[in-house]
Length: 272
Image (cartoon, rainbow, N blue to C red; front, side, top):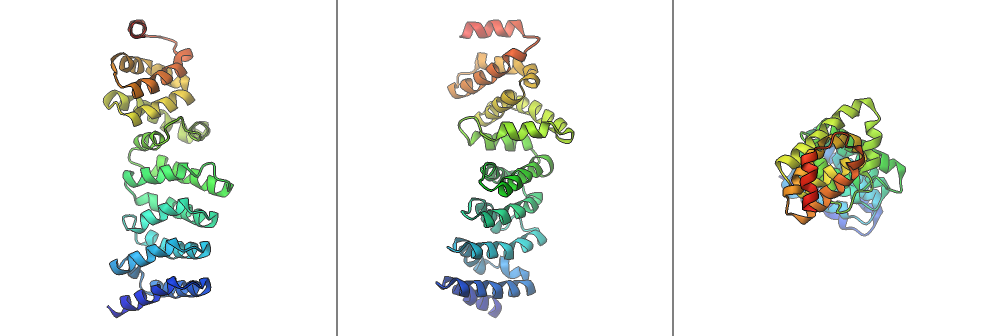
């Protein structure tokens, strides 16, 4: 339609080298979208709006994010192409853009599937040690919301996120420990711990083992009750990577095992 043609023509102005002109164009775009929010989701305009997120000016990128944010949230468009754009803004060099993106993802995650939430959770975890304490706190709050409210299977999301960090994570222990001290999270974390051991028993994957290792490291006394599962797998496993992770897990809980399974330990000693 002629409206889409006009908007396309207007968006071409975002290529102007003068950032003041680009700002004026965004104000015009914002007014048009306010009248007809569906313009944001028209196939011929999406790529042009996406390109605006590559603008060298942080205030411009922030303005584009502000424009699309309320319409994504209002229209429940978490499946739209802008969902990944908002997630990418979490890695923006500007704290201003990151802060706004964090505010949006908390709303978007309410309507997202676990696949999207896994990608989002990993990016959030990379912001935990951000120079800006505001960004760091917002990232933690967004991940808490995902794990304890929005996700269908938070245990699997944690496993996927932790497996992307090949060494032990730098953020997990402090993050999960501080939550466990709060009554409203402790029982949910207990369920996650139990589920993580069920997962390695049913599906011995690298990522499932990574989560067990982290839980054993942080909560050795709780995980010690599950030592039989770890030893049984070690006794029969031939995958060196898995063996290394589970040996480390067993090492973390050894001092807390009060009722050791003598038969399994004997078999374990024979394997060494």
